[in-house]
Image 1 (cartoon, one colour):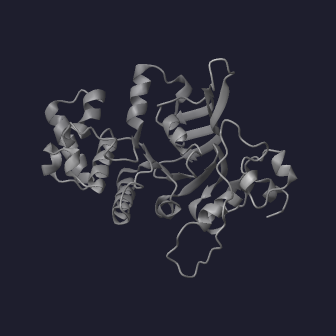
Image 2: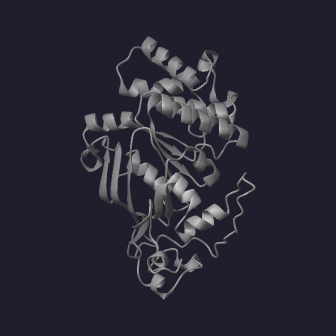
Image 3: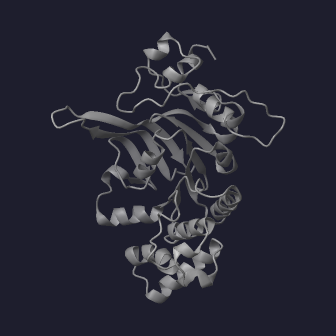
Length: 325
């Protein structure tokens, strides 16, 4: 079996927070105990409400930040030992990122050609002519015309700007692309076009995606595996079809119940989550989801569940362990 491009084991990311000058520092637990493998040509979708740790995970995978603890390797490189210049350069070429807001991630003062070429200028010794040819090649690959090369970002629609951002991410020929809500700022019809483009690029280039989203209807079209996060912790992980057809965790069930379906034969009872997402600075004791869970029991307020295997998927739920679901 091939080695995974990304291997994450028990990743944690904490931030020290102070309420005041004389107050003791507290830990904001942005990420706790995340583990997964990502292989070539595979898409892992990371889903959950805002504040669940999705973007923190993206920053760790792209070397923007380092984990507080745990093991993370990318293409065989241990991220904890990747501080030298040559290794950092290789990681930048291996993992690239596409951001949520295509306009905010593009320099309005730069022309499209310069934006796409910039990673080559920083990371390679190619000549100006070679950089231009590679930029035009990648523009054609993502459906942008050559004549757009000398235009500015404000002259394009949201979908076209996201294609520019995708072209910039692919110019260094990465193996992994982290997509942080890449279609949430686009119209529904444009979302479909960008998703189809990403699927085509994955097939053609053998890319692996980490697709971060809160929209499960979009995730269903692109994901091979789904990792469901709640308050920085994984609560369910498994193949996409298994998660959609037979969700185990009450939080996953609630998310899916709120997802619109075009299939008239599927009738879901809406599960309403009561209350707000707890603070990651002062999370509930026991299971973090217990204040909002309809299956919560006394044990859920005392013991913290761990990921257990249920058929083809994994879930962290004491109600499942105790047979209450």
